[in-house]
Length: 338
Ligand SMILES: [Fe+2]
Image (cartoon, rainbow, N blue to C red; front, side, top):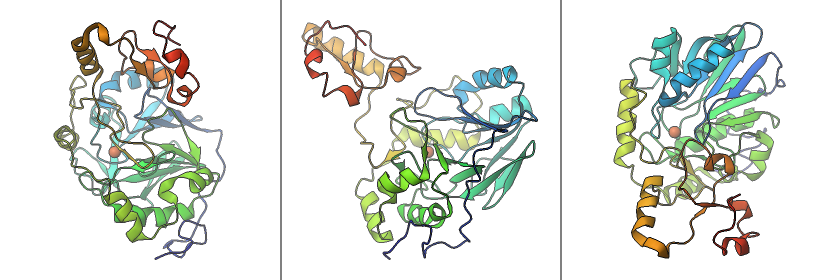
């Protein structure tokens, strides 16, 4: 089917197109808590100090607890937007440590989930209403969460991209369906807060995504499925193991399964997927080359270079957008690292 699929007058919409954006309210606090590509959001009521954490990472639970304590937040809900394949969820541990309720999509496999959400389910956070929308495609159990003026999209929609549809439970046709059903109901000014970003971007607005995001380009369902299917890849064993651990409700924050946490493993579209190697592996390969390896370029953003993923000592930092202009200085080893 062709036509104005993504416009607000889309023939694909099944529900009345109620604009989400009623403006970003000052009494609603939304804070992103992580460094790196994996995003965790604190959503809270400034008036009551009740809060929810969305997509918390297991390894960072202690830090979240400190943030909650410092802000005098009462954690009421922990929510995963879907069963994650790339990192371990902190929901169960946070629920056990704080007494918060754990909420996920009705189809989520994890047994520790106490509130199973469906289209239109609402969670009360001290008078602030958080509404769930079913947005399958990346997984069967993908949710987008609405708060006034904002959508927390998980891996349904990224800034300039979207989550992969070739992981277990993923389905490009279902992804097209959920985009076609929900995007037209969202106001252009709605702030998009993604579950990941691999280029240091924090947010966008839906109008910009409508204009620039390749996933929202006008395509038939068949064309969309063919587009995504062309880049489908097998799921690596470590992601299967991560899914299993999340379904079982992993509680050990020292557990490490992902070989390259933070790599662009959840993205498709404009973020190219290239072979991933860890910092340790890069260092090993460089050491094996000996003195012939004079220069290693790190093209990430400065905050990623200095962040939790680490970098190879001596690597020359040139963020990708600056690479073309700085090629000459890159050719002079010994130039100061910016
Ligand atoms: Fe994901």
